Length: 127
Image 1 (cartoon, rainbow, N blue to C red):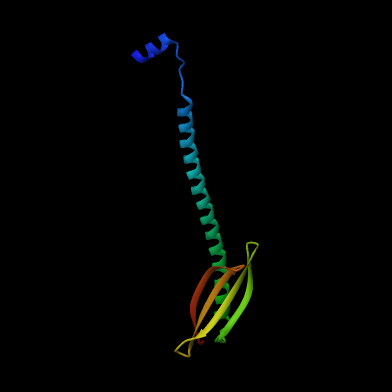
Image 2 (cartoon, rainbow, N blue to C red; image 1 turned 90 degrees about the horizontal axis):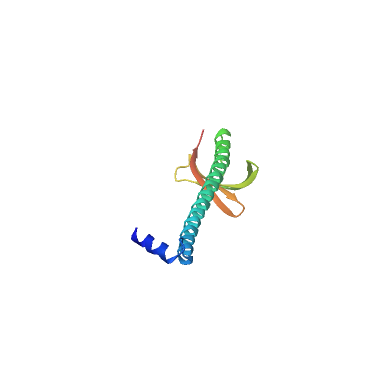
């Protein structure tokens, strides 16, 4: 209270100094930058979840086709395309023998261009 009276008596202006304003501005800018980075990370994560979900639908569709054919799949690789939600993915099926001749291992890898999005593996048996 006494310092206010002294300031009034001297005729000093009330308010913040330029240094105080710049420090506050720096703190606000840092907080906004941290918020922007967090928002960006959340957006990337959400896009990754969408990619994995669509890739999972593509891979499961191909594995279900194998099961519904009711035939033992031939050993080898096959590639096909899958369109989900307006996006085109490549699905690579790799059929490999197992020690038990009644079963085959099937790997379905889903690619978005050159980037691998998802890989599912299963075992298919004789029907």
